[in-house]
Length: 160
Image (cartoon, rainbow, N blue to C red):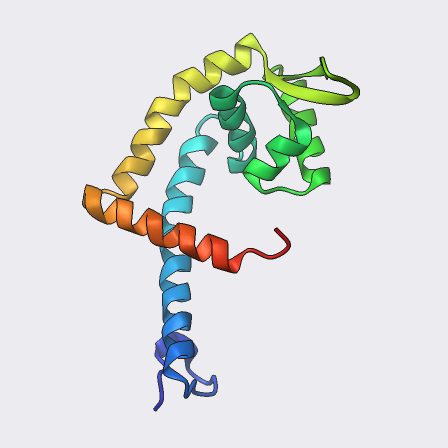
């Protein structure tokens, strides 16, 4: 059985239906992610932010001051990446580093009042952008999609 489509022209056929189905699912998932990510990226870019910078601001806005490695884990960047992002946001006056009360070696990242104001201003419209991007699904379909994606996350995790 040949499961190729136009995007796979020239590739050898996948003869195992389970593998072919997994590949089709992955392609659909990647395309859906890219479609929503493009909208999210354009939305935060209007405010002079990258999606990674917005991720830092958003997690601090919703969770409060956090250790840098916790911010890193939540927004899925490298340890060098989180340092770079916090440095950039600190230079813009949106984030500050604070001493950690329980550990003199650790540093917390926290929003400045300017950062708090910025996120409070732009987050509602950003949330609406994401809502609108997913408006083709019913509430039940969104719940089911989230449930299924959590299963993929658990079975696809490496090194956790």
